[in-house]
Image (cartoon, rainbow, N blue to C red; front, side, top):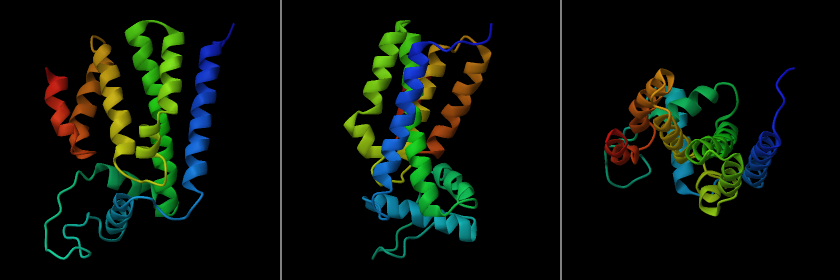
Length: 193
């Protein structure tokens, strides 16, 4: 009489595993990153692991500008980089976090439509959507890989906000979002309305 997984749950898990495998496959095709933001992220993480604080000035720029970035993603990867090398941690965590969007979209779509087949279709589309694939998979290590799943999870928590646990999760993630990515500052007023 135990838990019997539905066919949609099995397909969802297969899509999730396939998405993670594809993202990791493309990430490990080359030891290099495809964007300058990824190299900047690695330098931020390296600064945190060596000094405990992120870069405040960029020595690679000509002008002396003060850098202000939301630090949570960098500290998160820096913590993991104590277990595995920074480059490897960045690629694995970015691919895994980007792939987690498949599960979150499934939950949001199921909550909004009430249909598991529509939710499964939505998550399959999300898994292989080109813009999401490029933004958070192909040799990139940027805060987008954590910001997008967090934004969608906030949306899911908002749909179930009448339950206390989701209210607390909603508020906690809403507070953390500006420390993950600056674009969240624009979206917070929308979520609070």
